[in-house]
Image (tube, rainbow, N blue to C red; front, side, top):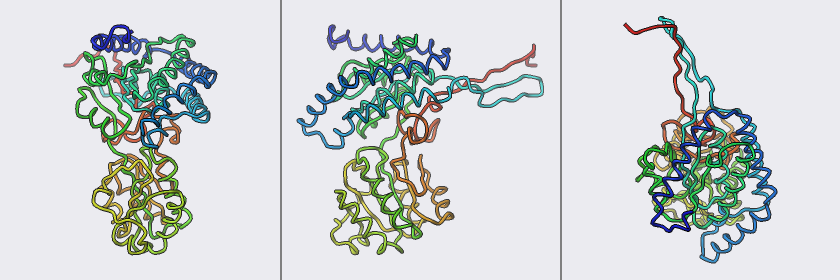
Length: 426
């Protein structure tokens, strides 16, 4: 083990993880859907049985984080509760019940010489998931990787490493119980930051994809240093737009939920846009509900003229992912103004329009090029579980391969199978 051999052995340790993962990926690629699903159900059962032990270990790490003065939103992300453990187990069962994405015929065709072609989905291979102190990611990432036929190397944050280790151990028990290789999901059992650098280097081409899930500094490092493909998003600067045809009750409830349900998640709204024509009517009830929930408000000149208690926003506010109970508010010239503002300041993550006008809604949905766009729904639905995917490894905001929640289908690629009957090329 690494702890017994010292930090000088880190490169050899990481190389060992990669070699085991590559071998496991080759074995997983041909496993039956039933066996993979059974592993996830077994893991759910074991996690439920060890709930008290998991909570005890997590509580120790949460108390240590609070003692160090970590932000409340950070502590919330790393904290487990009985309900959250139940959610983890339910997520495993949902993923187990989903259709297997491997071996699906995506497209088939033939050409004049009689050759027959099929584009067939296949696993990506070895996926490295680098995340901060979010215990559920340990299980979600491992489950999605296994169900899609991939091997996973998991590297969680140091603040929650013991919680991640016990969840990983439970998951591996499920793999073994189902007759799958335990090396199919491995965890980096050290907080040494150099381990991340080795993963990003590709470990002699044994890492096929890196998925970071965490704050801006983590994702920026991964994007800057990775020598293998990366699937990620950098910021979650999400917007809610209240149109002139918005229903007031929906405007209040959707805005409140988008911002305050959990302020530390990437789908939390950071900017509220309001049609200038309805600003005097919509702003007061929305602002009152946000204040009552403990949210600090910052607004542009038009907003502060109506409500002088709102602080003046500065340019930096429109570029900021707060991840805490702070919301910036701007008045815009209708849906065109909202789309313009979003194009200028959005990180391409999630945007929502609140309106009863179907035509305006469609204009917004067509005109906003973010990974997720919603009509009359909270931005906090930006989650793979809410999309019916069982869970997600992360949200992708790029334009290649995958956008939005990264679930089973997004963890596959494809190969082209060609069948002939003696054809040769002239």
